[in-house]
Amino acid sequence: MNPEANGLTRLQMPMLIIGLMTLAGVAMGAVFSHQQAIFFRGYLVGFLFCAGIAIGALAVLMIQYLTGGAWGVVIRRPLEAARQTLPLVALMFVPIVLGIHYLYIWSNPEEVSANHLLELKTPYLNLSFFVVRALFYFAVWVGVATVMSKWASRYESDNSPRTLLRLRQLSGFGLLGLALTVTFSAIDWAMSLDPTWYSTMYGLSFIVGHILSALAFSILVITSLARTRPVSEVMLPAVLRDLGNLLFAFIMLWAYLAFSQFLLIWYANLREEVTWYLPRMHGGWGWISGLLILFHFFVPFFLLLNRRVKDQAPTLRLVAGLVIVMHLVDLFWTVVPSAPRAGAHGGGHGEAAVNAIHWIDLVTALGLITLWAGFFVSRLRTRTLVPMNEPFVQEALNHG
Image 1 (tube, rainbow, N blue to C red):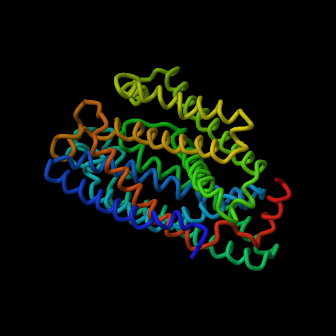
Image 2: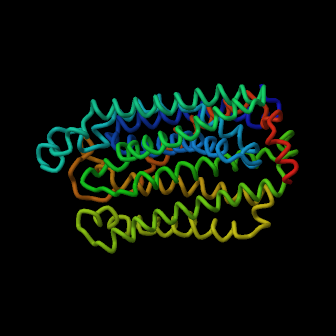
Image 3: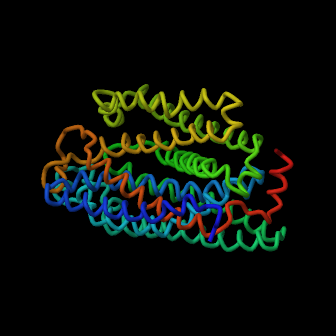
């Protein structure tokens, strides 16, 4: 057990209990009130949030093993703990399969038969192939994470250059596999909510979003433990500055991809493409779009330009927390308007209306995230917060 994470340990059981009770209560309420469609779309948002951090953590770990650097040692344990939640994330996918008819119109034969375009996509968009692809994605992610965990533990014990070489080789091929699987999973789980719309940049934006959320989450966790040992020994201004610069870079990359996708679609002005943005530019979703532009890019961008913000754990923690919150808002903005209209039996597929965020959406997503966070804490508390035996630790101390 990790004695330095006692503060987090006290949160583990309450989070697990609250998460389970919240999900069970909302699910029962949704069934009795015939709001299953709202429950499942909120569940999908929570699932994408948790999966994004877990997958993004695996990607950041591989990037750190390839590039080296002191910054990776400081956030190593939160990244590893998030990576170890991938089996739970795979289990969380089961309710999505059970509620697939409430989420994806292509899963309903009557909708497919009434839409020639959906008929043409049936060889790819069908239930059995959808499940097979998901099993393949999780097999790749869990398999790579398992092998990496084994070699990382060995490297911490022997500090062998040969073990580090294996980690770097795995990371190189793993990042390629991760890029492909995350791209297709984003198409399957999010873009196919509106199967008549497509974007060639969609998968890449999800990849960057996963990495950004994992990086911000790990910074949030480790800066919250900045006063505990041995974190306090390596939580030096120069290391924090490196983490802030990395967060800054991925915020800019996320904004670049989001704006580029919008600009290309707006400039082309094709009916089959602009329909995805139209509901997000008006009404309540228009206000949320403005909040995303302001608080997911401009505010953290200008805050991280200030060196003093990056050099101090409390201010960097504030920026990381803001990024995490806005990432969740971004997932609601992505999923809810594209989900089938709620209210009718079977999710009301095919009805032309724009969904609004319902309290069931919020409570379901937050309940699932709380459950995942409790499991994350259970993984984090099993090891020391800093891998003190690694050579990179001395580099961090010298760098600071």
